[in-house]
Image 1 (cartoon, rainbow, N blue to C red):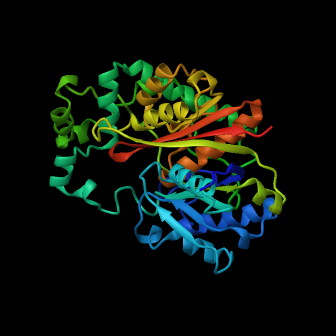
Image 2 (cartoon, rainbow, N blue to C red):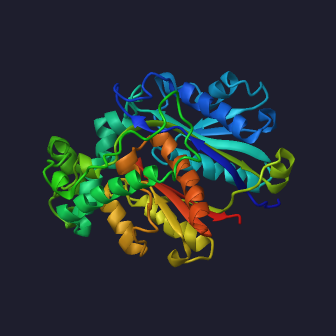
Length: 398
């Protein structure tokens, strides 16, 4: 079996809306969001959609309006023809980046020539945990697996790694300010496709201060007291009592969004008249203890960098899903990735986490930033529930 170079040809996403009934995307279904981007992708690139050999979407809550293989439904409604397949996958928060990873693997294996990967999530219409899977609802499964809430895992990691409240708050303010500056500078203009009159991530709080964050109460004390702390401490008695240090200001905000990445071989790009923007060098999945949970994304980053024969210092841009401040501070410390390389334009704490869409957003955002700074290598990564993580390493095409 031959292995082919896989290129990222283009990337589009919606702005991120608040994941509530007050959000600017709440009036649209998840299918609407994907169809909107499929139309935009064709308009931007001149792509003949019938050349697309598959559409793979990540989606974390696959029920209700997000059920019944949304990728196929959206592709039919977008008018891409009966012969363009579609598949929807779920690796929790890492679903969107896994869609990119799996599609790239199929392209490398010569199973596909041209394909679309991405993700969508409308948290405002299909709430988190609404699929009522046993990992969320069955007491026996929760106890046996050690399925704790993500916020409990975040506070457990903060306690384990010794991150104090002032450090967490400082990171929360930093990412807000970076996101606001990047939007004001036009860094997101190339890839964000307005939806009606809505054109900017609406969760950003540019006026955030460390002092303001310091006044917020811990967000997960109540959840911990309901029995979640006991599950975590039973799994990790060596850490000791959990100190609840994360607040809503140092946690990822819930968002509605969709994102699509167009991938293809060099031959397919030539036939479509498109110039490759980046090459997918490698991808990696990782898993870890489901109670510690949120370190899996970092493990996937370390794995993919080693797989490519590189060192962390070789990476110009890290786009790492901000699954709480503590995990970002640990990532930055362990990989020596300062604020100029790790989430240089803000992250999900500021702009919002749209579960299935987030990973695809980060891959595209990584390519955009590599082009802006004329860097060479970038890595995008996401940690998901139950201790799952996925990373994708890309190289800019000059």
